[in-house]
Image (cartoon, rainbow, N blue to C red; front, side):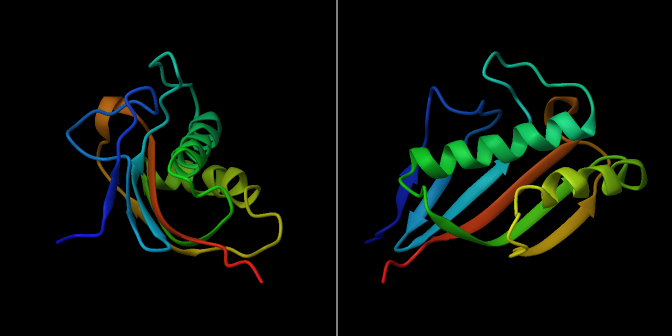
Length: 131
């Protein structure tokens, strides 16, 4: 029997396929790749705005899953037009880690993403341990 908890939010970030927003296993949360959909279902223009929106969507899923205070352990970034977007995406991404504790990360150029989006990010987080 699985101890995994499957989180799916009908009023959360837009789902474009059959999946859970996150799966919880013990102190770990595995987040599905988030796209830059705003609450109204639209996608903002530009890689900077899309990156900010994806990071906010990840934060929303973490919080809704009961993982507000976390260590982000691993991240995968999927970018269309890699050469054009990589540097600008990194500036926005880095701002979300002001303490310089960057997670392990893979960044991959892809030919296309759902909904014509330019970025998708998934991650694995762990609840912070209290002393």
